[in-house]
Image (tube, rainbow, N blue to C red; front, top):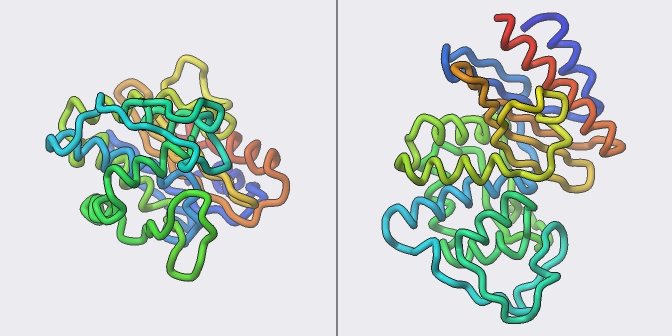
Amino acid sequence: MSPRLIEALRQVPAQLGAYYHDLQSGRTWSWNGEDDFPAASVIKVPILLAVLRQAQLGLLQLDQLQTVEFKHHVGGAGVIFELHDGVKLQIQDLCRLMIVVSDNIASNLLLDIAGMDTVRAFMASAGMSSTLLGRRFMENPRPGRDNRTTALDMGRCLEALVRGELLDKNHTNQALSILRRQQFREKIPLMLPTELSVAHKTGELEGVRHDVALVEIPDRPYVLSLLTRKGPVSWEVDKALAQLSLEVYRWHLEH
């Protein structure tokens, strides 16, 4: 790593875990990449992939309808709680809402549809050995019942997805298409060229600001996973992560 990149890593005003992988050359570096972090909403990426795996296997249909009732409502991010009681949504719509606006109701419904144990088994098969799915979204964490992950696990999950190791071509393309439509773009994509495609997922809790991404430079894509905890003001951490992302992009093109 260059001195400029190391300085950008050190300038993040929070405890940082970072992981980078050049999908063309195989070059990799890690900065506290194996440190344990609250997963927040980045754990919705393997949930999405587990649901798509079940669709690939014919165990569910993405166009099948799910009735959403007021009893399913939880707080936090999302839009479903603004809709009427009994609204019917396709599973593929729940997938989009879970990723694009990080809808917690959609996420919990997909956990019910796929099954917590099925998602855990999928994460294990994807090599996410340090990731724990211990609770539904908006449930209070308890010892042994929390959602935890590492920058390394999240990065390797995206690598395996892009290499076609987790899903067939059709469902891989569906996953990436959904991830490209992420609406929260204040971290990894913010300072990158506007024409550059970034397939990513953010996650936020108090003191926690995450973003995990596939940066789709033509012929030179790379994976970047940034996790933080114990940050002060959220916008300051977001800005530092955006600046770090830009420095990684510049370094990637120069080397």
